[in-house]
Image 1 (cartoon, rainbow, N blue to C red):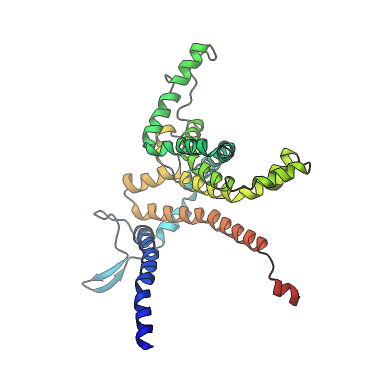
Image 2 (image 1 turned 30 degrees about the vertical axis):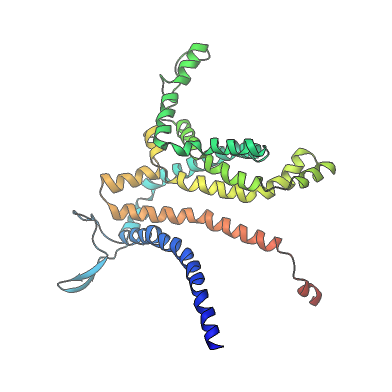
Length: 318
């Protein structure tokens, strides 16, 4: 009996080890390429700048006089002291990211619905077209947009030729050009989560609501919108979070009045060489961006609890 049990254990070891290895690999990847850089950025935010490589003092170490530490909260105190200098770029970043997310949602929702309700053949083709921009560099797409929006670009040339405008319209270095760049870049990230939710909608629910006399607005408000809310939240987070820290699009399409946090971080890192202050800004920005994620998780948890059916034994006991 003991020998048979030992053989069963040995035969099960590879399977258990394989499952643990499959789980461990992504965890190790996250620890090495996400958690450790985050910890390094956090510790740099509590050090002081210096001339040299790296351009900051070590947080702690052992020297000739023994253990030493350079821990300081001066970088965060500096941000609080000169908060007005950083509030403008932070407000611009949140504003542009919010409206870019809203515009992406307004365009992506009907597009995702159209794709989800298409036939299987056309659905695959349309999904490929949605993902097609990811096959090219975003920098190339931004430069192509510059060619469309500049005073000598295609849009102004077409407007002048058709007689719709008398002079070229200034579209570059404005909020409009940044919104165009944001929507062009992040629209697929909004479409895909919405499509993943909409394609699983039960068509019988919509038919039943229509048979019961529900109007299109009522069906959308009471059935479609609540069921697609997880896709709206996921797509909004995928667009809003990277848009807040976007650097390339505002730098190429915006002007000096469109100063955003991405530009502030670049200036502190590479022009001022003040890595501790830049790290403090990055950590504060990260803390702000985690608020919508925590809220979304909280809402998902509440919805899951509300949708959980009661336990029959508890009902009988009650």
